[in-house]
Image (cartoon, each protein chain N blue to C red):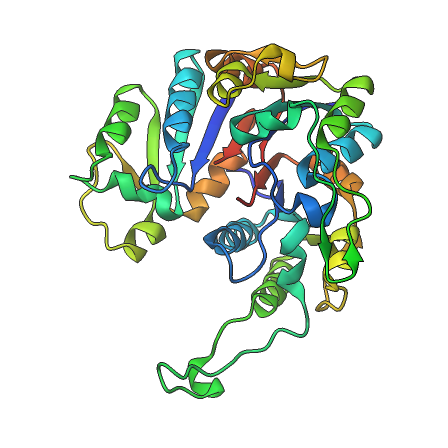
Length: 127
Length: 137
Length: 108
């Protein structure tokens, strides 16, 4: 079974109308289908590991958003399922995220460690 | 380069929004032309590439009629790629991600593509010589 | 030994992320992996000789990264003179590179 690394960098793209991040969702589905998959959050997507994201409260006319995305919880669920979720340390620091701001179980790596992470996987899918 | 290999490509961009779509179809064309099989996993907006209801239109800036303008439609380009695959005796397997189709109302597509899901991407990739993901921004 | 084919569709005039990708490509190459950078779409813009970011491309060429530029994308943008060491290629070549055994293909 090939080891796949899904790199997620774009954040909050259509997450309201999708009720999740579609690449994280896809990763979860691939895991459910038996894939040996890991995730690397980089660039703005490091914010997906921030605790306490709240997208609730939107309505359009009388259409209320009933199930807002809870992306931090989605990431947490994947970690609990055994998906290794990495995060580029410098990208988080650049965005003012301290360790205490992040959900538990995230594996931090330095930017210069990314090539080695790529080498450890058979396929690298950069979303 | 040995022919008869299989390439899997995952795409996400809706038509007429990004040059990624054109490049992806160029890669598919080149691979089929060389005698390789291609699997396409159309995710998110890319499921709109094959919608039957796409129509060419005139161009009022250029003053052209529909016939003169010959405006491309991605559904015609994809349809032509299926014909190319058939001519070359290779397989083009185009999967439109079902839930993406449902939420976009993109279910009425040209002949050729089939409905599928993430497992199809995994299965296709596992059985391919190479996989390329072309993301959207 | 794994080979890397990195396909750059973005450009440093529009995307601050291009610098990250250039550093990543150098990082991969420094680990001794055969690395090809295939520029496509606006990714070819810095390869024009004299462009503000042509040094970024020149640095990659000096780092032993094979730098290819999509001929159609160059023609589309009327780019004639290229940074030294950049080779013009086409989709046929890209397909060949994708299908070389042991290749990891990454699109940016």
